[in-house]
Length: 102
Image (cartoon, rainbow, N blue to C red; front, top):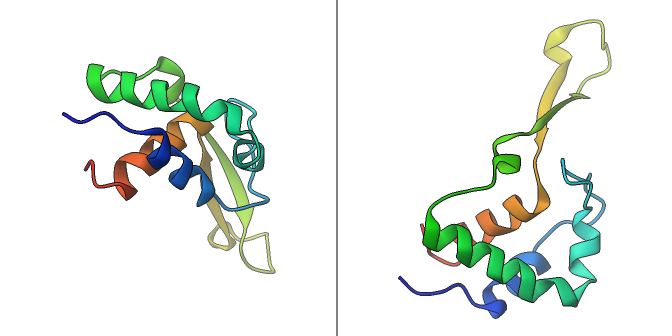
């Protein structure tokens, strides 16, 4: 099993969309895009998860937030839910899916 590289993590982080909400860890994706010093730690985290096949208990939790999608908000069908998850979890998943580890 090959280790995940800093280049792969950097590529995944660069694909994050600007202006998105912070997850359960209160880290906004924009912050990760502009903080190059976190790449080595994030790479180490991704590799630890990948090799041990175990995830943090924090990654098992998400926060479901209702988002309006249509004008009449009195109807339940005019809302949708999104799940905010830990940003480090999201980044490791991006690397895993986009770089061909799946």
